[in-house]
Image 1 (tube, rainbow over the protein chains, first blue to last red):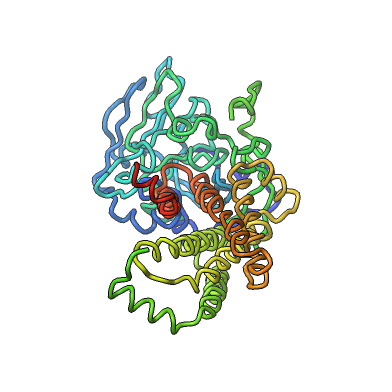
Image 2 (image 1 turned 45 degrees about the vertical axis):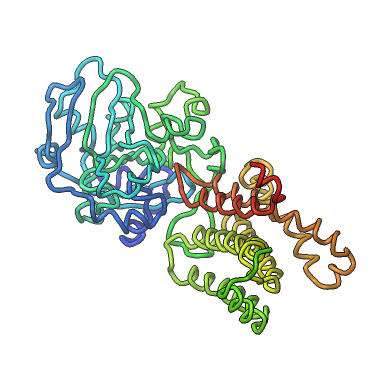
Length: 268
Length: 204
């Protein structure tokens, strides 16, 4: 990747981003495989088996197969990316990820003509995942990006945060991060990457298409049916922290050309 | 009414000796303790935590309030003297829940109103809160006398829609399949079902 952390901060930012603490980032999570309470992932994710780990790459690629994380990242140098993270529920954090650009990984895999979308899948380990046993969602958790979104330099596959290996509750050993979209698009603990022709299913979109669109770009002017998306609360401000305005594309205006000519109310 | 068993008699004997006022003290202290925890790092998102804690506590007191009558009817346990305090604690925790939401969470009067009008689960919660207000206002002996026993009892049927609306409010809040809100709804509906006339239950 050619972009450093400083250059991806986004023009909307007057001041540098102050990351949330490691504790905040690792104790307040949505990872429904471990339960629906924010504290469930940090409580239960320890049981997840991440060694050995295998990622199946298939579909319209030149180099399909089963990859280890090391094989997938071979030849690429992980870099730090300090990104804002906006949850669809109306809270946000700033997280110092370590990762590589998804585009570089896809470049290695060799995207074939005809591929229009990238589909992702999270591991399912029922015996280690109380939320899977409880049927909180229809697992495995799946997500997808349009190919041009996936190729955008802001999209990364992250393997760590705060320069440490990715904590399990944050999606060890490797996860997607798309900072201009609501957090649930940034699928965790990847076991499959498929290049496909048709728009792939996305878990929340399938669970409740009325509330969660395929694109799910952060957009202060399109409300969630049950709450406003105009403002957000930055985690870490305590009991009396005030709300702040949510920015279009979470402040990452450089992705706007991806959606030129699209109705973002219709394609929410 | 069931004849009280040995255990029920012991509970009744104990209930006769214990006054109801410590319940208010307990409720107030518990509310303050939750607030203190929210101030002191119980969660990295203390506003959401406190809002939920007050809401859940209100539902728990609601279950306790609605359990008093069936306990007497089916087990002969008489805790009637505690019911007013339990019911008032429901009101005060719902009030606290509402205030945390409006002042600490939403933070703007216009947005509070917009949410109440626009978001059905909030409309429902607000409805339950409004129905609780006349109950709280008439929870004194003077009001009971003024309304008369029958009138007062009739007014307190409002508790039943409050229970259903409160549980529905909780269910509607969840993303994905959450079991706890459904458990509360089941318990509350169960407690309401015990109030159906006996012959209808027998005929079923």
